[in-house]
Length: 124
Length: 124
Image (cartoon, rainbow over all chains, first blue to last red; front, side):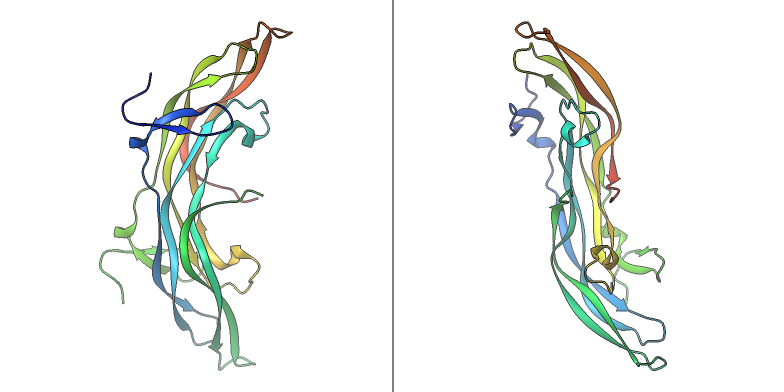
């Protein structure tokens, strides 16, 4: 017996398993938001750069399936675990002036986040 | 200069960094939802058990910080990457009747999900 609303068949190698209706599913979101970042180091004049950070709520699920291997957690479920992280970054070099240090500069590498997206962790 | 709304200081070892206002933050959610699960195997009579699956949207973020190690992605950001997965499970043994097989039964271990929660992956 199927509950009200269109069913959402979860395609997989084994016969498709219908677990919920589309009405229960909500679209995940992952925003690229601007921020001002202070680059600091002891003895140096701090610098300010504009950067972005990622913030969002991605859809994740864990659906158990009969696993016959108690130890291997992976075999016992369909799972999806994306999170909101940078999709595109580049590294920028920031040179801080440090009058009291020798040499009087410090070089910092800063990851500049360009675009964020719900991305699944590639499990090692 | 701080934007409108109460500020949300992100406490950390370095001086607290204010990146967004609480109005932008939304509560994550992670539901434990009932499902009927078919336990099947070729040559056996399938059985049905009631189980639960996890589905939700957990808050994740990635905030760059000056990392001076290009290779080590971890040093270059504050990050939180929880996803909706089982918090409490137990394993149940299901015995399938398999008239055409010898022995005429198959034993399956099924993970029974009791409670789901937004849980961070403990990175190895």
